[in-house]
Image (cartoon, rainbow, N blue to C red; front, side, top):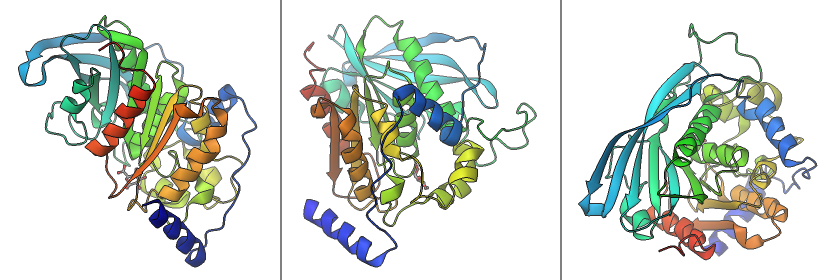
Length: 341
Ligand code: GTR
């Protein structure tokens, strides 16, 4: 498989416009990196006085999972105002203090047959898991930030949907901090694709996430722009999904993928020394696995303990599968997350 990816990269270099470029060296500290990416890519979260609230609205036993399910109503804040969303939590029976895997979901969190969120597989390891649906926070629609009465003039560094979804993930942690079943030192944030970008942005910003998982996260995720061989470009992503980013992302960087003064390994490095996992899929050409692999390689230098940043690539298409989850759970196990069981 690694031979296949190598050949893919070589052929792509030969036939595409790609060149092997050394990405810009990280020349900022973590706080500077975060404010740089906020201003120039994902947008700045404004100061807000919204009332943070999390209410457990339902608690029930789920015998088929040997777990307790809690539904929590959580308040959050978005570029179009305050809103509420439900987080669905599963706590395995018999574990006093659980690691928790928060999954940002495309599908409603009430869907227990979602192959991308393998509840039983996670619970079996002695971890709890929580999901919320990103659309319940802010609709994933290019028009969502346009023409709304509640939204004032959108500034060049105003926040977009990725920031809003990441902010909501941190509100889930606010709740978990009040939950006695949780081991506060073992909270992971997991996302796939656009939600892999979101997980990376959330994990870079909020140090309460002790593990960040960016699965097939591609452009503006854990993939170098300067090693994009044949996948999504800044032009394409910011034209199709302008609402994901600050207007600056397009204004400043469109068409400049190979000449940026930064690259995504800076953001990945902002997760260090906490745990980071990057996952690729071999046939996910749009996300560009060689660029994700290179992002891992360049970001790795930020970790003194190299075993705390994990990379894997599996055969197959763009997806988060139980094979990927096994990789992330095994990574957590290697880092002694499950000793409590
Ligand atoms: C694509 C987008 C990618 C990725 C993907 C997804 O259309 O171009 O950046 O985020 O959607 O989220 O599935």
